Image (cartoon, rainbow, N blue to C red; front, side):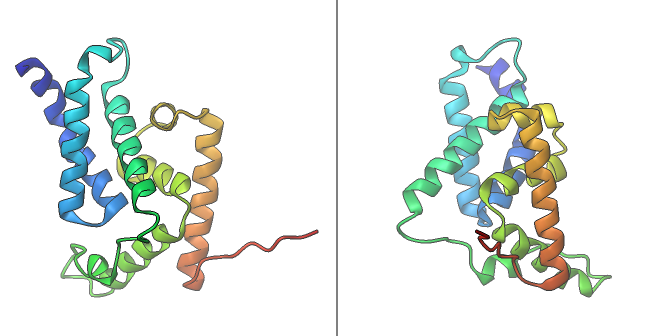
Length: 169
């Protein structure tokens, strides 16, 4: 058990960052990380020894997050303005507060698939191959989701609103 804890412990900060970025709530993020670690420990015997531990942990966390989303669909989203106000900011840059809130609001407008790719590549610094393993999609899908997500986020940052696609017949 000590061996497992030694292997898992270095990944906890990254799991926590990703959970917070997905949920924007400290308590819920902590619960998601705890559930992820419990699931990893209880299924340690089924882990591929030659597999990437970090990717396996992020896969577990994302799957638990998606399960949580499915359970909460009838209640609507949990993220509110108070979550955006709690973002840690650099006191030397007063405009940083507005920029951080805009980025978080822009991330909220993205579909979950694009948001996950952006967070895993941009925040957690996972390679495209690692993200593909976490999401169980081809690397090309990761690259296209990342490209579309970055473009939508850029458009949101420029216009202050989500771009709505029109159906053309």
